[in-house]
Image (cartoon, rainbow, N blue to C red; front, side, top):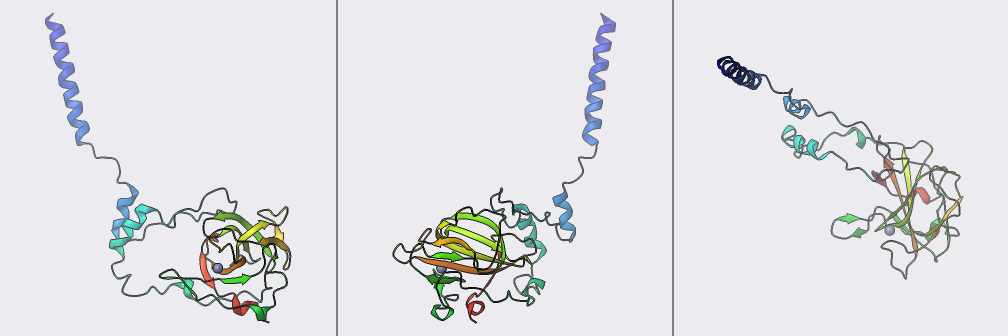
Length: 233
Ligand SMILES: [Zn+2]
């Protein structure tokens, strides 16, 4: 009996000792997020390509990175960043008016029109009867067929250099057989004018926008370019 008691006591003491020893072990290596505070910039996630269209638009920045960014760039709001993206780039060449039968002279530049409180239109509205053919403004690739609340039935086309995107919105329907990944030529019929999305049902038109893509070439993101001068001869 006595040896059993001694044995149990020994086990208890041993377990307690192990517990104390484990408590003193250093913790797991710090999470990578902590290393960001050393002053170096957080590594950006690898560029994501959604060109296959299988994923919904990803948030621009991961939420935890946004928070970590704040104390690292206290002066960011004082001095506008000398963004390399702001460097002037070669504008896309002349474009075809993307609505059948509309002459360039008939267009009105609505790029700077105020929409809502602070938002500018940043696109061109080309008025035309419902069902009028919508044409590819230039050679390119259909990268996304997308339905959105404001835009309704829309098409995103990339130019062959993949520096610019053309956006066609409020379509009544797509051209038969139009598919993501399809190569189109300038003047190809890609859809039909309509009033889908937030367009006035009594004012069918094509909402046409051009934007310069970011290096990530995300179809939903870019810097708007006024299409009007590009549509003039
Ligand atoms: Zn518009």
